[in-house]
Structures are given as structure tokens and as C-alpha cells.
Length: 345
Image 1 (cartoon, rainbow, N blue to C red):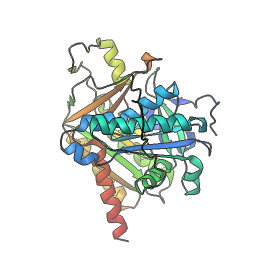
Image 2: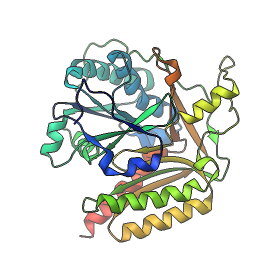
Image 3: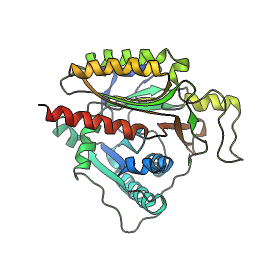
């Protein structure tokens, strides 16, 4: 079991390895789990405010890391929000930083950011777990992967009004140093940008889900650069003074979170219509067998929100989502599938 003084767990350089449930380590009961999401993100995206939604989603990670003094805690970007884990001594830091982010989102972006914060022990009492592994995207960057169903359980509780962090009356601006959106959206090079979420049903054995997920990844791995959505050539900066050399751009692509495991697969990919159709057929069959639920959304462009930690600029992180709704639209499809499954019982 991890503790606040332990060395970080081993990072795995091959993404398929994070599908193995045995590599995940449980977090201690007293650790904190935080969840944020933009209320009404789908309508905001529909009105063309996708960049604001993504910026609000990533701002919690930036503010927490800057307030904590390091980005060594587990976290995951979810498009219209984020999830993270901190040791118990981070309670005051997390509460203050998240209140600042919520106030910033409302005042500067016109978005309501919902925030939940609870101990891991509460999640285990609810019958779920939070376990963490690390994926080494490059030699300088690792991304946390989560399993156990705990984040999904916590998110549902938060949306039902539990464990919410109430907005503070008086807050200072959050420290968002290093958070930036410097690049115009990336057009698909191979057909469509796909946002895909795949989660196992509760009665699905972990090995069954792992086998299915590997089949899905194998299809996308047939695409150029494993269907990576960040183009090899330099894209167009929003600002004239934003420039990186070709070697650094290669590192940007390597440090991008286009593949994640967050109580299920979370993927942003540039792929052909044939690859999408093949994967959709695989997942539809698995859903009919009662093994998984999934949501997907197709769009023309991908978005990238960048985080360059001031203490470790070489560990720059690049968060990806689809421009036309991305993970928020894929989650909407998944939720519709869950409701249909419940009503048919």
C-alpha cells in the first residue's frame, strides 16, 4: 500500500501493461480523493466554449500542483474536469486551491465548477476501491492510472450532492502558472478524432475486461503512430511568440495523455472510419454480453491544453480532448446506455 513517504510506484512504459489489475497499488484509507467537473459542460461546448471548458478542467491540476509545491501526486485530466489523490496533510491546501479555482472559473470563464473531496476510506465503505499505477509516457513524464471503481463512485456521490466543497466567500486567485493553451486545434490527419470511454460492468471479471481492452488497443495500434492525435509536424501557434523547435515538438507529442486508464479506457485518437467501425463492433458485442458500457464521439479536431511545471519544465504535460464535445459527449452516450440498461431490468 502507498503512503505519503513512499517512493513512487514503478512506472510502466508499455500502455497495455496498465490493463493488468495486479500492478495497481491501493491508496491508504486516509488519503483524499478529489473530483471536479464543469456543470453544464455539454451546453457550453455546444456554444463553442470547448477551450474554456478544457481550461477549467485542467486548472484544478495546475492550482493544486502549484499550491502543493510539486506535481508528484496522482491525477488525471478528464476534459471537463479532473480527479486526483493527495495524502491527508494536503486537506487544507486542496480545499483552498479548489475554492480558488471554482471562483476563478465562475468570475473569469463564466463556468460553474463542481468540486468533491472525500477520504479513500469513505469510498471503501461504499464498496469500491482506489488503486493507482503509473504509465511512463516518456523518460520525463509519467501519468497516473486509476482502478477499483472508486473515482466513478465518488463522482456519482458528488453529483448527488455529497462531499461537496462549498465555495469560499473570500478567495484569492489560484496560481495557474504554467497552464496555457498555445496551439490551434489539430485537424484529423486520418479521418476523424475519436473520443472513447470504455468501462466494465460490476460483474465483469478484470481479466475479461483487460482482454477486451487489449483488442480495442490493437485495432488503433494499426494506425500510424498508434493513432496519436498530435501531428508530427509543428502545428499553428495562437500567438506569434509561441514557438518550439521540431525536436521539442516530438517531446510534446510523447508527453501527451492521449491514452489513459481511469476506471476504464479513456482515449483521444486520430483514426480512420474503418478502425472506428471495427472497434465499435467489438464494443457493441461486448455490451450485448453484459461486459462493458462505452461512449464515443467523433469530431474533426483535437484540443491540447499544456502544463509546464515551473520547477521541472522538462516534465511538461499536454492534456488532450476532442474539440466537438470530446469526453463530455462520450460520457453522455455512456450515461444514456446505463439508463437504458437499468430500465430494461
